[in-house]
Length: 572
Image (cartoon, rainbow, N blue to C red):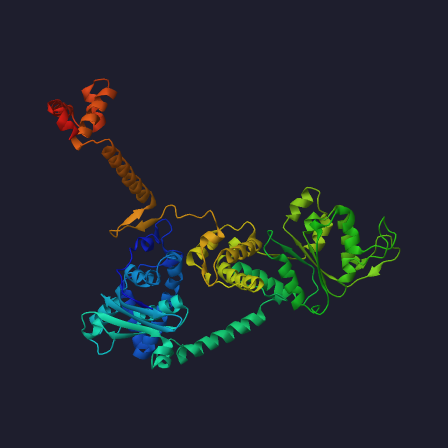
């Protein structure tokens, strides 16, 4: 349908999204991290690209960069003004382009029929930073030069309508025009739409570089320890040190002791160790020692003959026998009772088990991987763990670092978990906002990777489809306290100042309404105020004057004026 262009809506809702956090030096637009940059530095980058890649490649690279920025801003449009008209929601893009200092964008034509697949949008640009920089460096141009801005308009509109929209720059300030003018249509409406779309495809040079990068990543993945759930993810130094120890232990038969806090992924490490070992085609059995009652743990581990205890109506095969030829992981080993520890030590030394109620030993070939979050040396001192068992297990210890020690891995882990839960719940999100990623990186992670799993699943469920997960979906108590925003005059204003100003304005409004309701004039109001201050000061004029912020002579003069007024004057 055709729209006459109304004035752009007020942008207070957009300005409120811009937050300056001076404590940590971050600037936010909603959940997206922003930068204040010198346009001269962007121009230097543009020059370097021109000299290295040439004008054609540079144009396409910058257009794609602008396209990506436009897509990010489009995610905000329908969220910010969900009850606005289509034009008011669409206007978020031009208004953000203004607010970000890129260009003064003013829509001139907005004619759209989404069902019919028809769009015509014209926007006037003034004060384009790209046109200004291009002319300053290379003089007047024969071709439009606002490449990044043009990419932004196409990316924003395509993401907004969820259908590819491409803009052309019809005139440009860099070519001597008084302003730039762009026109956008759905790609199929342009006669040369296929050619225009090619501008946003990766260049052959970049495609090749991307292919090489993919090959490197594929080779690296093959070298990474992995199990049925995929490779162990992480590139941080602490994590890679643990992985390297795991890789060296895999082809041997050494007993491995995995230590680390709860939730760091000890079972994943044990599973990956088994998958890389010569025992990979044999069983991998994991048992949580803390989850088993003391009276059942021996029968669970070593098995039981029929009639060995009340309720044993049949022979029970224990975990050691199930894992024969493969790997047995004993998780939370520090919680194992002392009698079971003594039997475990014997199994490790002899390679034989005895079922409860059994009369003959059974030979087993099992590689044991123990895991605990307990300080076993301290447990030995306290008499809760056998010293000889510790010495037997502590041949090859691997400490898995806590998540807070591998901050650089958090984003890749989070995105991997989002893909996992997206498939599980049948929903998809666009990813995480920069603000959410910053909050994840600064979190202390007492629950480690398990806590991250819970946060990602909750964030996915709480967020709308195809939108970015923001920090409030992950950390409900998060607030913007201590940050500054931009007021209507373009100045920074802290939240406290904004709140105080709002309160003052509200107070003044209430006071004015009360004065009108009582039929008071300004003189009448002054008379009442002066008399009340003198009354409260007990007739002490000096004290009354101080309370009103004036001198005693000034108060006396005003009181004399009050006495001289007639009753009629006071009412009027």
